[in-house]
Length: 305
Image (cartoon, rainbow, N blue to C red; front, side, top):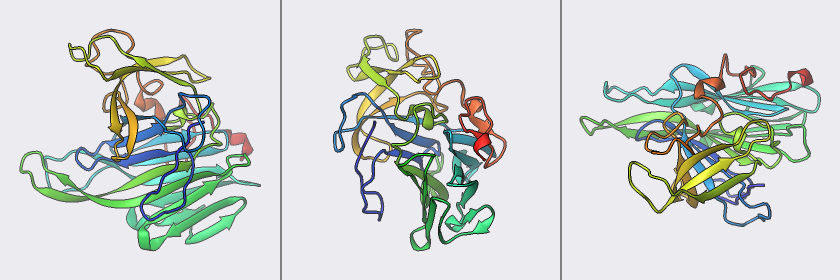
């Protein structure tokens, strides 16, 4: 399984399995970093390689991030509010988690405004219930959510409510924006059948090999072919540009793949390998509401609720 040990913000406890869902405050495209399983003998503390990609999404739409048998996570995309007519970018302003506990399913909602958190519509400042833990740290605008995912090891997620600045591409002025950052800190018990914009890459075999074709009409030395072998879909292969840092400037190898909607790269000259980074199209991951679980690749078992 993919593993990593990190320290994030003011959280000092190390945890395993690292996925970032952040917003690039220069372009506004929600950016994703997922660990990839390239070595079946990987041990805790070993170097972890990742995929770096983006899903710009659509203003006013909900997208599924994780769909597993007992856990579903959705994000709400909105256009960032700035006084500049030259800035057109989306950010995430809500996270919705539907999780099966010991006896029932629960809806956990985190809003950008104050990182306010509700469980089944009721305000929550710190709650342990039905095998689920939700803790809101008001002073640091973050929420820790732990759910069993019908397993013995907890799936641990963080929601950070952040502020940043974006630069006007015409006037070069800076404007403040606010957005949510979503982080999976421990995802070892995500099943290999899990899906969603990030869930589909968890605990599935990925191979990396040198790319000998042309990129943008020229040969390059740090381009690689990434092949994802998800157990419930056909293998996908696409070209990745290898860099030594992630979107978050963490020093870790990351293969930058796909276009702004995690689709095919126009710079790849050969017809193959140039599959979409995500299975299908990004619109296949749209859901009707913050807690909706029905979409093309849904793996959530509603009968457990």
